[in-house]
Image (cartoon, rainbow, N blue to C red; front, side, top):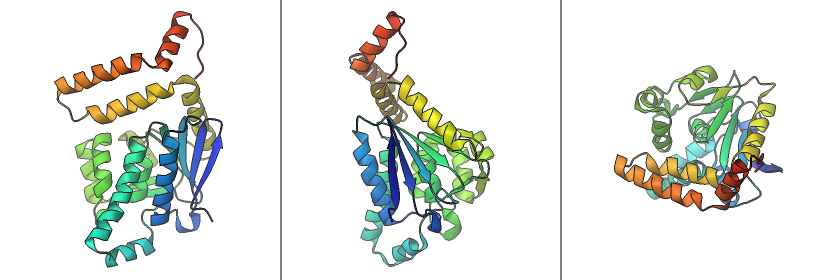
Length: 257
């Protein structure tokens, strides 16, 4: 059985976690397969949007129990290499050239919560819940902390990471952890519509450049940030997409990307 399923519909790729009987718990094999898929899709011109979803009752319940047991017997070097794999996966998603949407139905906990919320956009059903529960088992939410601080700020990150509490989808939406709550019987249709709209209404090169700029600019001084923004602005103006978009705007033509 494939741990992650891949299906492409026009310019949208659906990656589906397929360990429903294990609540889609993270394993070495799942992380490796996701890395392989996201790496391959990064430069695939036939793809504009990636939707990350899951089969079963949970989106992803964190680390697999067998995986956790194995970690206890690892050397420091082995654990470091393993941690770097998860860090690579999160970085791939965060810095990916495509827009990545996570569709959460059920629990997204610990590493699974990190996986869902590191995506560009996240939509969840009302009964879904979110939590970084690592501190409750003597572990730490180390890798996700970098991305979470950027996403919701220090005060809210500390509240979630230091308490390990689990919050529902409505509360997750209120603090900016996810984008919206969508009824269970509508979420697949609505997410597909969002993905299709992104494919039609946004430029691929503009999305890639905008994501890269947002990732790079946050920790710079104002002068360095504005210098970088100016450089990226000049770079964007020379792209074929920009020339095409401006021509369509000036000619009052409807543009479909």
